Image (cartoon, rainbow, N blue to C red; front, side, top):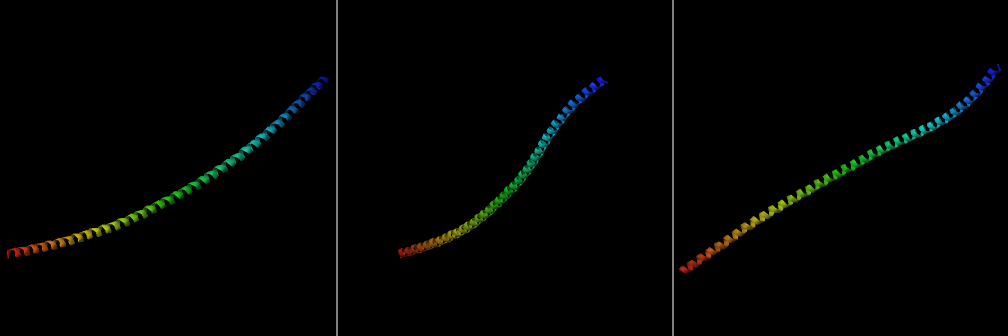
Length: 139
C-alpha cells in the first residue's frame, strides 16, 4: 500500500509538472495565436488600404484619361475650325485674285484694242498724208 501510495504520489507530482508544462504551453500558444491574429488584422487593414488606393488610382487615371481625351477632341475641333477658316480665306483670296486677273485681262484687251485703233488712225493719217503728197507731187 505504501508503494502504491508513493507511486501514486510520484504520478501526481509528474502529472502536476505535466499540467504546469501544458498550462505554460497553452499560454504560449494563446500569446502566439493573439500575435498571429494581430498580424492578420494588420494585413487585412493593409489589404483594404491597398485596394482603396488602387481603386482611387484607377478612378483618377480614368478621370485623367477622360480629361486628356476631351482636351484632344477640343484641340482637333479647333484645328479643323482653323483649317476651315484658312481654307475659306484662301478660297476668298483665290476668288479675289481671279477677279483681279480678269480685270487686268480686260484692261489689257481694251488697251490692245485702243492701241490698234490708234495705230490704225496713225496709219490712215499717214496714208492720207502720203496720198496728199503724191497728189501734190503729181501736180
